[in-house]
Amino acid sequence: MDTKQSLAALIAETIENCYMGIDGLPTAEEIGGYLEIPPQKEMGDYAFPCFKLSRALRMGPPQIASTLAGAIDAGDLCEAKQQGGYLNFFLNRDNFAQKTLDNVLAAGESYGADTMGEGKTVCIDYSSINIAKRFHIGHLSTTMLGHSLGRIFRHLGYKTVGINHLGDWGTQFGKLIYAFKTWGNEAEVEEKGVPELTRLYVKFHEEAEKDPTLDDEGRRWFKAIEDGDEEALRLFNWFKDLTLRDAKPVYDMLGVEFDSYNGESFYVDKTDRVVNELREKNLLTLSEGASVVDLDEENSGMPPCLILKKDGTTIYATRDIAAALYRKETYDFDKCLYVVAYQQDLHFRQFFKVIEKMGYDWAKDLKHVAFGMISVGGQSLSTRKGHVLFLEDVLNTAIQKAREIIDEKSPDLENKDEVAKQVGIGAVVYADLQNGRIKDIDFTWERVLSFDGETGPYVQYTHARCCSALRKAEGLEEAAIDYSALGDDFAQELLRQLSRFPDAVKEAALRYEPSIITRAVTELCKAYNKFYYENRIIVDEAGVRAARIALTRAVKNTIKTGLYLIGIEAPERM
Image (cartoon, rainbow, N blue to C red; front, side):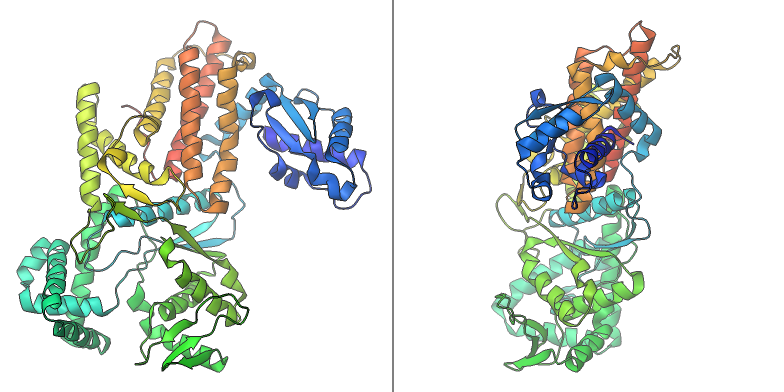
């Protein structure tokens, strides 16, 4: 049991003793959720807001706080003081140091792990690249958010299913086939891959602006794909293979893997079930020749969800409903997350609502994990206009810059190429995940490749600093830890940051927000660097040295765990 849990149990026991027999009193677990971190250190390490008890006890918060402060027997855990309607707790520093270090070191790199997700499955739909288009910077957020959420949920005991819902259906593929047949060369496309397909796609749109009848040719070739035409399917599947082959090096660089690559085309033959079920349940109505589901019975203001177009063909929503049904039946998920930009919010609200109207109570388990858009120099990304920034180029540029810095500052470092790769990619990923996911990002090289301030390289360097201190301690005489040596303000702040890490992991999962872990690890690094500058690690006093080495090891393990959870490597030397 960590310090926070011990404190929550103590408060719950005191409340029960003071107000025995009253219904509606909170449990220790609930109290743990109520505990706050005071805005100023002078107000204590934790605070319990007594207004949480006012309704059950029918008393004012100051009266409750006064009663509890007089009754609480904190022993050597802490000192309790009333401040208005709050009960403030000042932890016993030696006891806090021992409990925190014991918990962190016993867990090792599993610190913050939990069993709350045992027996539960989370499906995560993310990345979702488009066939015949290169992996560009606009896919960075969805890819790394989904990847990080998968690691976070697994850390908490969940089984996760990573799904790359490929964008592999639509008239754009008919247009691409026409462009290839008209201006392409098979050997050249095989050699150059997706960049050549992109060139052909851009050329199609340039030519279609001059001759709009080309759009009819694109629709004709897409109809050939739908009808199973041998040549159309051969080219369509070839384009898919080229795309995945092109994307694989980027996924490998990022350490990203998927359990399923079932994209839109996989669900086309599963949409009849959706349409038939909607008809059987009298949910489909006609609107100007199209089949829709009305969603505004409760004055929600939500427009109808289009299921079939006038010509009887399906759209995104139909296929997404089919995909949700398939995933529930295949994986029996407890949550299904869709990591997609916020511009698609209405789409998700609509098809989630349709599934609810179909009578599936698990519709509540479908979650749209929205994130902001990425622009480049203030301009939105557009493949057809050729305005894109390819992610592989970004990563390679970051690696090159990291290598230049290493050559300058650490010329004798071993494995320079590997460290440069870890640092360069870490800089890009950190820049993407450091702020709340809903914020728009205007990509600039200066921002992403900055190695100064609170950046990925800064966090990685702090990990390497911890490793260096631990290497210097190798072979020294071991001794019992003198916990009183960790009573100074710098050590205590560092211990506080360590103790809060498990809560940060849970909150990141609850809010689908990896930036919470990014910030927690950054604050931990800032606290360690202040501690490091104020306290020598390798000192003559054996007990003091043992305490500072133990604290350094705990920090090192936690930084590595935090970096792993957001998809970044932790170099031991930099």
